[in-house]
Image 1 (tube, rainbow, N blue to C red):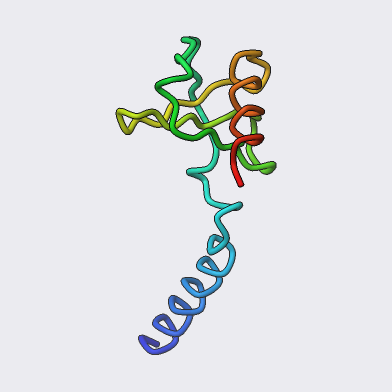
Image 2 (cartoon, rainbow, N blue to C red):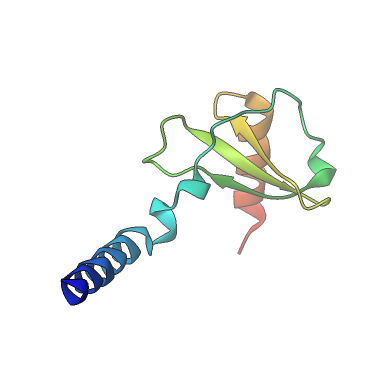
Length: 90
């Protein structure tokens, strides 16, 4: 019985790892709380879109202070900053 439980546990871990192995499916690529503050562009290091699987679309802004701040997708300033970053990246 113990061997069966161990085998099932390993199978479950393997399956979960396969499902969550891709960065696009990880929950940390989703936002659950959103900031309403505008972040100055000179304080932004990178901006990433949240995954398409997330409940709400948004951007994850990484600042020079090392913070990750979620911003709603409809905010015009973050869309502008995201588009600028896309143009500047190789």
